[in-house]
Image (cartoon, rainbow, N blue to C red):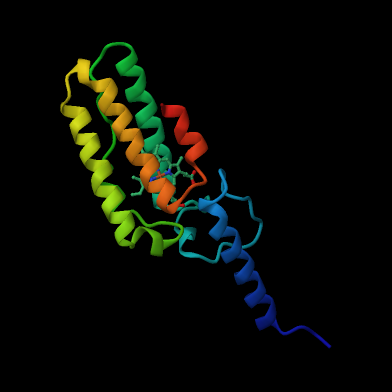
Length: 151
Ligand code: HEC
């Protein structure tokens, strides 16, 4: 007896969903050769808009850290407001009140940092990394090991 094509599609979808659910609990998103069946297939490499923004945020923060270490004013190169609208691998996470509260507090710490003079910048930079960590502790612990390198 042949397996019905529906069965195959259903189990492939379940597998894809299971792998995507891991993306916030493991440090790097698992590789998958399964066809991409979720909303994140809008990006050719399978990463969500939010995941790409987060990587850019990490690089941006690392760049600001270097400026502070050199005694310069840190300047962000990113449109961080996108954190409020970028589509996520798990859309229900980004739609949650928890996410929105942490996103606003992150944007505030960033604004404070950008207005700070060089003497205050070190402390305010740490506050900003704390706010990255706050949201990740609540919603997405996987990348915390990486974010710690910003301290
Ligand atoms: C408001 C919550 C929130 C804040 C604030 C936040 N993150 Fe994230 N971050 C997330 C979520 C949710 C994901 C998962 C994104 C996805 O897969 O769609 C993520 C993913 C990541 C990833 C993994 C990206 C990948 O390669 O898949 C890194 C690295 C990261 N964040 C770093 C940071 C850094 C650095 C900051 C602060 C400058 C920060 N995050 C602030 C919620 C947040």
